[in-house]
Image (cartoon, rainbow, N blue to C red; front, side, top):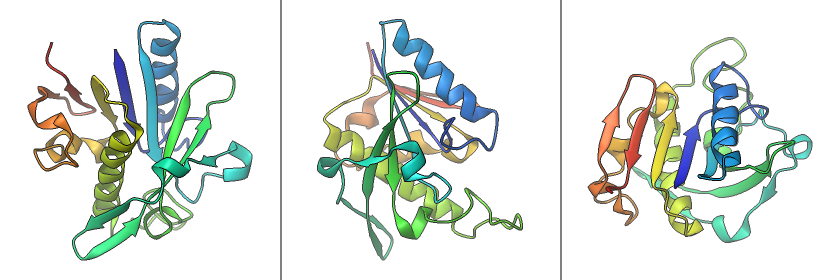
Length: 181
């Protein structure tokens, strides 16, 4: 079974909450069982060091243009392995939305006014990257309150993916999408 975890943070790349450790350890445990193929996607915030974390651009996945309203931004996809395990994390990268010295707020704690738009860009980037990767997950597990609406976003017009026929179940902390059968 293929499981895609999408999150706003993953340890050791971004550790603003305890969720970052869960997003690291749960996919690792499932992957090591040999029964699951797991992948993780997260935004590449300005706080994530490319050099220290050995991020590399995936040319075949980069260059897609993502539209949000009247704005079109170019997506770059980068990848790194979590140190000590064989599990890759794909980073959705864009200077306009993510190259900031904070995840959801600036150093003074003031929330970025475009957080909802940034989350929508991330969701569209994930959908586009799944399609370009040629890897259809059986289960998509969004982890973080800002991603709870992701399954709703995966409707009939979502980048020609077959999410619209996937059963959905929601909880306050997570939202699940899985293929029938």
